[in-house]
Length: 555
Image (cartoon, rainbow, N blue to C red):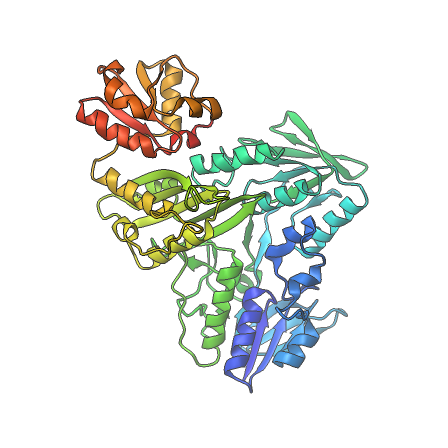
C-alpha cells in the first residue's frame, strides 16, 4: 500500500508515524516544501528571545535527535522529501505531481493521500509591504532574519501589526531583547478573537507596565521606507511610528490551493472533512491548519490553527489510512499563552460571541489567589465564566493572571466536553492543599458566583457601566468597604460620590448610606462586597456589587 503525505508539519508527520506503527509494510512518503520539516513552529518566538538556541532545537526528539530526513528513514522507514513541492493531484490516476529541489518533476502514486498543507500568513495590502524589514513570522527564515538584525545592531524598534496570539508572544520576545515594541491593533481592544473586553484590558495594562506601547482602534495605512528598508509606519493616515522591523501578525488562512485545484470540497475555514477526517474523495484525508473543524458547542465549522489539534488529526488519519475507524469529534477553541509573567487562557465562547449566537448568558468575574492566601508566593488570577442561564451549562471561560491558570482552564475544558453545568463544576472534587489551591478554589468560587446570580442572590455592575454612570453625573453612592490600610495601599475610585465605611463597621453605620440612591459596593476583589450586598438588601437598599472588585477598575 502506498501512502503519500503532503506536508511535513505536526499533522502530516504524525499521520505518517501513526500509519507506520499500524502497518510495517506500507510505503510511506512525506513531501514537504520547506527546509525544516518536523519543526515545532510554536517555539519560534522562544528562539528569537534566545530561550531556544538553534532552529534545529525545535526539531529534536526528547532524546535530543534532530528529526531530519535521515532520522525518518532510519528510525521510521518513512521517506521524507524536503524542499519538494506538491504541484498537482490527479485524482483519477491517484498520482501526486512534485517538483524536486533540482527543478525536475516527478510523480508519486498513492492508495491513500493525506493533505496536511497547513496555513499561510495574511499579508496586509499596504504601500511598501514588501520592503526589507517586513516579516510575517510564518517560517524559521523570518525568525532567523530577526535574530540577524538584532545581532548586527540593526534592530532597536519594532512595530507588531496585530494584537493576537503571535503578536503577544513576539512582544515579549522582542522586549526581552531590549527592542522597543509598539503593538497596533485595528479592533477596540487586543486579543479580540480570544477574550472579552475586561479580560483583554488586564493584558493591555500589563503590557504597558512592561514598556510595550499598545495602540488600539488603529490601522497601519503605509509602511515608510528609506532606501528600500523599513523606517516606520503610518497609522490612520496621520501618525508616524518609527521602527526598524514590521512584523505582520494579522492572522493566517488555511492553505487549500492543492485541494481547490483538484476539485475537493472546500469551505470558508478550510478543506471540508467528515468526522474521520476524510475529504470529499474517499481516498484523500486532510488535517491540521488546512481543514475546517467542528465547534463542539454549536456544530458549526471553525478555523483552529493549533499544533495540539494538528497532532490529534494526524493520529486519527494515521489510523484510518491503515484500516482503522477513528473519529475526531471537534474542538472548543482552547488557547493558552504567556506574556512575560502573565498567563492567559481561554476556551469555548466569549460572552460577546455567545450573545451574538443568541444564548441567554450569565457571567461572572472573580478574582482570587492561585493557592492559599497565606502560602508563600501565591499569585493572583482573574476568572471569567460564561454559562447558559437556566440550565447553567458552561459555555466558556477566560483566565488571566500571574498565577497558575493552565490546570484551571483544563478543568473547564474537561467539564465542557462532558457537557457539565456550573452546578456540577461547583462540586468538582479538585485537588486541595495550601501550596496548590484554596480550600474553595477560585474556579469553584466562579461557579458558585454564577449560581448566585441565577438564583437572584446577587446583582452586579461592570466597571465600564459604573464609569459611564459616574461620567454622566448620575446621583448614586459608591460604597467602598475596604479598610483604611487598603485605601492607602491600593487604587481607589476618585469621586465625591464615594462613601467609605469599612466592612467591620457596616452593621453599625449602615444608616449613613442614603436609602433613596443606588448603591454600588466595592472592595478589592468582590468577595466582601457580596456579603455587604446581602446585608444591605435585607435592610431595603437598592444596591449592586462592582463585578470582580477594584481588580477590574481600569481608570
